[in-house]
Image 1 (cartoon, rainbow, N blue to C red):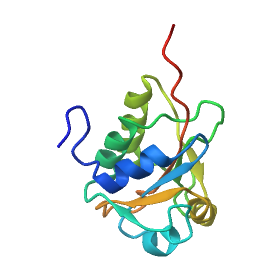
Image 2 (tube, one colour):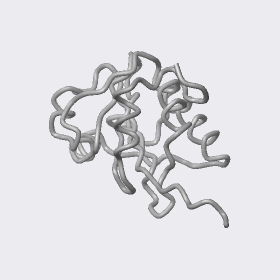
Image 3 (tube, rainbow, N blue to C red):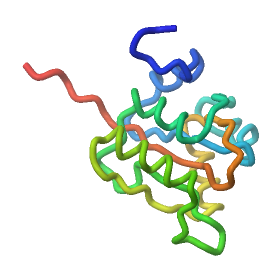
Image 4 (tube, helix red, strand yellow):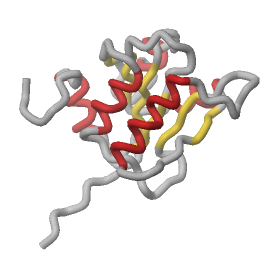
Length: 150
């Protein structure tokens, strides 16, 4: 245990978050997502796990992880097949965590299912959660941490 760091963030996840650079994508996936096969195609090349809900994992990750302010798609959700405008409860919960972490409304964009899979394959890493609700899949693009004011 470390002070000030969410205990859900295990050593493997912390190492990946630290190694990522500006513009790298992180995928938070539900239990139904093909996480292992997709993770093998990412920059990290192996699957990370946090056995908690998608919202709990998003909260933990976003406590350390800055979202990219230079692009419009730094926070994304997998859209429901055939219902692209519908936002299920799991996505509403994660949206609340995104907004809290950023201190303002930061709407996630919707990404079509197969386009989401392709984005995930290009990501730095995939974290599979214990989320069992459908469409609990998210992509977060890493931003920058500004220098301290002089």
